[in-house]
Length: 217
Image 1 (cartoon, rainbow, N blue to C red):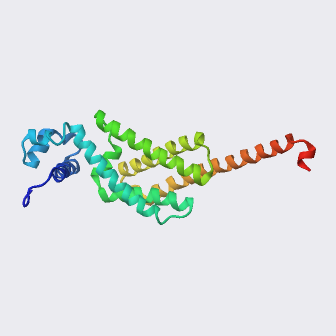
Image 2: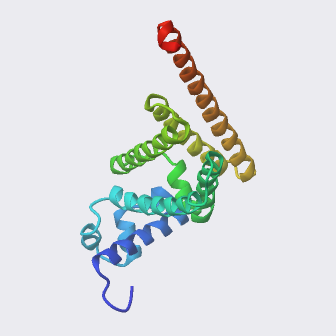
Image 3: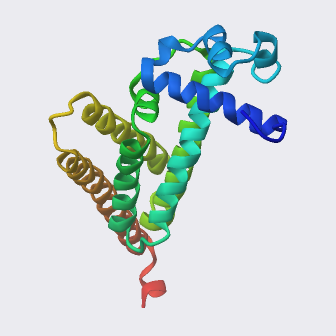
């Protein structure tokens, strides 16, 4: 770090850069406060003044990965119009960013965690994503929240599982995994939408039959 004295935000970002390189080169287990301080060429008290723990460092890296992922996916979604196009933008954008960010984001997706701070951040992230997609399904498919919410949770898990499968099986073609994921997501949502329309039609017909003959005439 040379030139003008970095401000606090810049210094924090530099430490996250160091963690990203360490994770990419040696994996998550290599990240310790001592190792990061050495690689960043600062004392441990300086590092601790910015991040109180290893978990905080990893959470900051994970949140940066998510911001970049969200930006890439949102750019694709802005061009999408139909439900199919939205699903394709989501899945393809997700895989593209996994490929672009490489080992850092890929390890973040596939690795188990033993850091409470990181697990909490992931849980909040998953809940936020599920709320967003539940609202989307309610609006686009007229699904009630009681159906849209579990659908969003199940399909988010399916997407993450598909990504993990691709990462852990490098001989498998990426496009094959993407298309399989899209088929499952589209089929499931189509089935839910058709069931919803059938239930609505059945309730409407039943209400009509319960009306007095004069009211129907």
